[in-house]
Amino acid sequence: MSRIPLTPVESLTPTARDFLRRHGELNVFRLLAGAPKVFDGWSAMVDAQLDGGSFSPRLRELVILRIAHLQRCAYQIAQHTDVGRAAGISDAEIGALSAEGPVPGFAEPENTVLIFVGELCTTGTVTQETFAATRAVLDEARLTELLLLISLYYGLALVLNAAEPDIDDQARLETSP
Image (cartoon, rainbow, N blue to C red; front, side, top):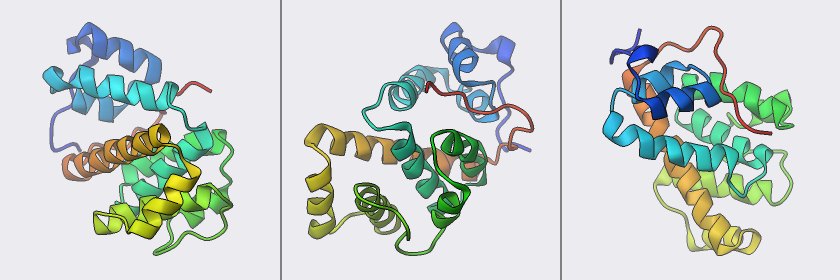
């Protein structure tokens, strides 16, 4: 049971209700909507990442699932595994994302991005070599977007791990193809 009460759908702001209509009535969204002064801005960032980002759905979900495994965030793993499969990530690849240390079996540029994610999430920084390698496969805008994607889902994993909302029985995250 969530350590913070979930906001009833009928009590949500119109913006929050619209967000849930588009992405699913998930416990995580009802939890975060309990902070209405920041939820609208947070949900706009999620929209930009899920529906308007410059990464393919596959690469985006690889990043999110890697973060979820590194943070041991069962809620994110549960919600994004199906999204990852729909984006073309195999069950073997999803399993590989839970590896300690380097993630085996990915080609470029996915491998470089996953090394970057792993290093940043486990050490709090990246080496000059890792940064340069990632900069070689992503332009400045996409590298900045990657950093924002990491910060969004790393931070969300911390919130979920602390608040412990129940994993949704039926509701699943909905994203644009």
